[in-house]
Length: 173
Image (cartoon, rainbow, N blue to C red):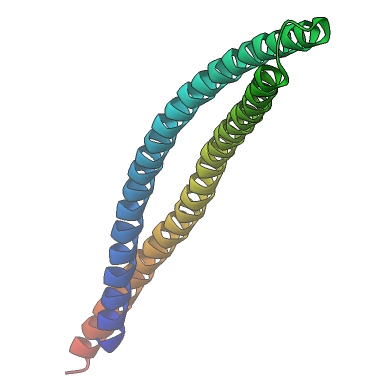
């Protein structure tokens, strides 16, 4: 009778483990979807940032071209004696400032491209990590179900043996 109780306890334990693993699978799949959705939102925002930063960089390049042309014109006018050194220096400063703005715009654009790449990689890693966790949990679930079936068979065997022993004991009295 003690063996029957022990087998019932084992059966209950395996049954609980199966239930817990099934709940874990549902949770993992839900979390996978939520995380993927969050990363997709981040990816969309990052894509928009890349587009905006790219447009800004192109605009700054155009401004730099204009600043270079103006600076060159003023240099020519200085050589011709039509402009003063002060005016030419003002345009040299504008050219230097525009060069710095263009370099900042390029850096910002490159940073947003790197951010987009990081998010894309994280999205792929997220899928792989959750697939790995889900596969591991499914394997553990299969093992638990197998152990549950084995425990049910053993319980049935012990019950049959107990019934047989009780029946035989009844013949001796």
